[in-house]
Image (cartoon, rainbow, N blue to C red; front, side, top):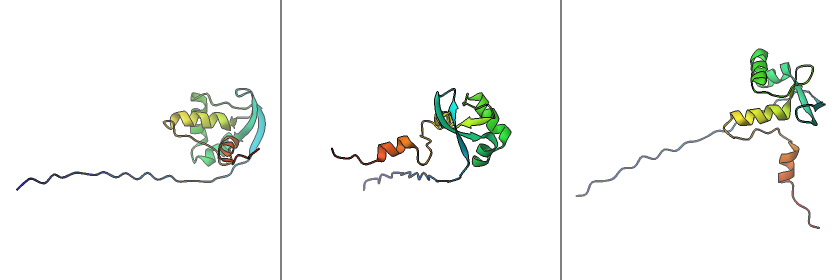
Length: 109
């Protein structure tokens, strides 16, 4: 009689949850990016991320997120900083032109 071998199998499930929220943005020149980009007001961004305005302001300041003259936050700069803090998992806006270019079908010439 031979001994039976046992194995332990671990299965991990990772859930991805999509949350869609809206906020009004303004299209302005960002001195840090050197381009015209979307800006969102600090208090509206705090509502989007369900965090205190002071906590978001501290995050923005500590991580060098580009800001406008009226405490507006440069969205591309904020996404880039968030990308660095999420272990390389891409953070993108729905309808991001770069994302759309990558998925758009190519026309035959």
